[in-house]
Image (cartoon, rainbow, N blue to C red; front, top):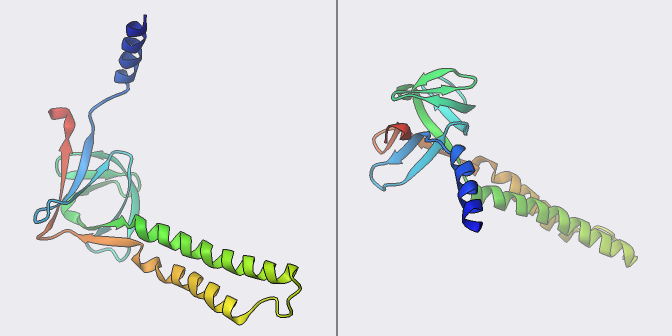
Length: 161
């Protein structure tokens, strides 16, 4: 009976599986790569555009990527891809939360103890420094991967394998 249940569960799981197409951003020198699948959100920069474009990947062919907003775009038109640095994002959150929490805890502690200056200058400097450091990390949140001699873009269709 247990085997029958396991076989039925595997059968229903396998009906939802299908091969996918992926956009591969790879570095030929270091063998480092990033994969983007259909439905993923990606931040790109195109030749001739000033800013970053955030869009969702709908479909891919051999030489083009079809986006939700931008439409069909050839791989040669993409000049770079922005990759989010998760460590910077976590550090930003912790320093912002730590600065606000330190200010709140120290001020509340001095308030309930009836200390005369409720907010000390040292508390303002420390908590303000942590919050300012959190905002100073914003430019480092994304890393640009320039398509060129080291980084290449290509699409892989896993249906064909």
